[in-house]
Image (tube, rainbow, N blue to C red; front, side, top):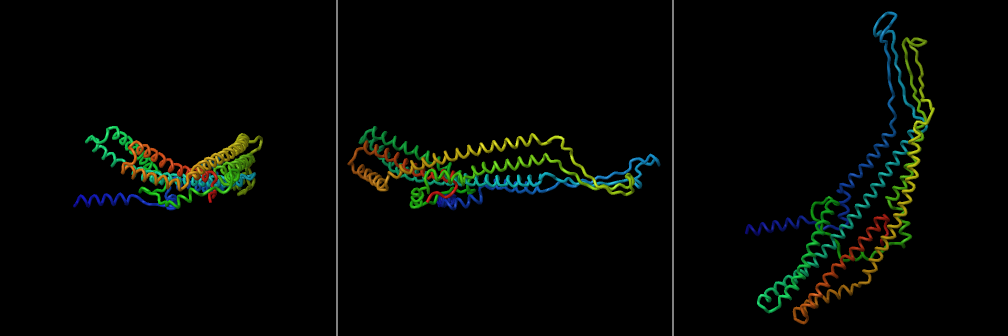
Length: 413
């Protein structure tokens, strides 16, 4: 009795360790728990801190002087008769602060685009992993169904072979089918384990996730087509792709940096006030002090040239990114279209007929209407076809997600 209770507890714990989740449920958990996404958010916070820092001026400088030695009265530290104080403030000229603040704000925009791109990449990874897991579980279910029947059939043949009623050759032929199905099951289970681990990392959920996706929902996803042709999709990608927009913004960012570096060539002003008790023309005189470096040469000339080269470099990189993006969209669209057309050729009636034939072959084999060779050949063909159809459907979803990742706006309707 205790053993039965223990088994029930183990079974219930295994069930509890699995969660049925829709894709939207996974997305919600992903937004809340994904550590990569949460870490990237701090780059935006640090950019805000840089903006704050760029607005801060240098602190004013306060200095003082006292007498160290009075040669007339031969006194050391004659503080009562000779002392002074001075306060100075650095005044930025040439728009340095304004340019520094503009550059810091541009850096924040870059950080936001980087965050957007990471969010898109991780979301697509979440979707593709979810669909991979969904179809691997369907493949496992189908394979286990075949394996269960063929294993029972093999066990029966082994009994008959031992009695000499069937040949050893037939037993070996069935054994090879069972081995192949077992290998399929091992490979599928390995894939399922990997996808479950990936989903745990992406969503922050420690339990195994079982996709909650109905046949009608999967059918709708497969039937969806992109809005617009190849050229229209390329145009949308150029307008919306965060990675490409980052490269465009990088050009503006480098221009702001060059402008800031150029303004650093303008000398700054040191403005201050000084009080001297007894060392000036007058007693207790107060003076205005002004200091400025002599602009005999451009002290920041090298950094200005370097910043100008960075502008040209970023312009070329943006051109490359645009060409690369358009090429990727073109290839992704063609891949999706090819896979979609291939699956479209397989009608639902064809799939239903395949199941009817499968059940018919099982019944006819049980009745002895077909030979073992015919049955084994059919089962091997059915096994490969069933797995290929699942892979074809999954391939369409993966290709659609790749298009979504590149174009980054709603295109499937």
